[in-house]
Length: 64
Image 1 (cartoon, one colour):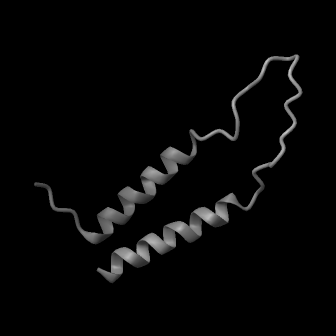
Image 2: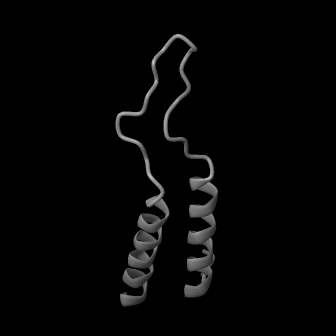
């Protein structure tokens, strides 16, 4: 089995997060006759939540 260093695990995790988050969409598209106003918009603080979650994950990995 391939052994990865701690630094390699962090780099791979961050790379996966970047690749996954670029393909996420807030909502699907609708036809032109549908009133598609957003009831609960995703605001600009999503990046802050991702940084906090990533930091918490790295902290938990280092603790082990």
